Image 1 (tube, rainbow, N blue to C red):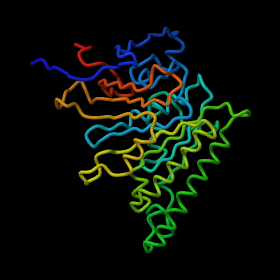
Image 2: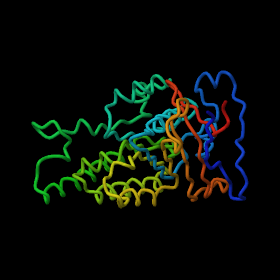
Image 3: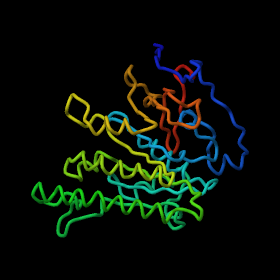
Image 4: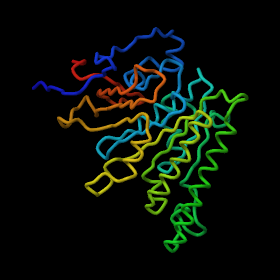
Length: 301
């Protein structure tokens, strides 16, 4: 039985369908990067050889049914392209370095070599432990008042490490593009003993780096892990400060063997490229081994 998909295509400010531009890549560049234009890059306004655009905040939202981890991996690989000098500062609350290294190696990106070359900085929050306790430092058994002070101090300390990493990563003249990625913000909230205010303070601190140094801030969050019917303040605030929101969702029509979910990319404006302002793109995706296919509904047989 055939299945009909209902999804909104891309539209520009003139209320006309957004036509994807094609680019001719040489075989050597295709082999080196496997970076032919795809719908995700086009929706983000990225061109060949360009990493995450500078001075903006990107929020990636997923759910239990549909993980958006592949988007994070894609942005890491793109930012660390040998065609650019960009650097990545990765704050990991979710997985150890070996996890990301294994995945990115399969995608043709050697994080160990890039770390040695000072292009990839990995801040492993899983290794921060209290003496004699196998848990993150933020989770020490303290009174609520003392825990709050520890959390606040921990947030400031982490921000200080990120700021220092940014300053170290800058090339002479400050010309290097730097992307700060956080995986994931929910686990940071857990580590902060549920203090969303400390997490929001941290995000606002990091946001200042986007204006001071021209960095990009990319944050992953799980939208459906909160039990409350009302959307929590943390999610609402993150969506407010983000210039771009990437949502990974299951198909509204249910399970499909050849389609793993739907991505919606919302550009809220604040862009120097007017064609991207207030534009929303929705398309399907399929994760295949070491790559991801993006396509519009009905474009495949």
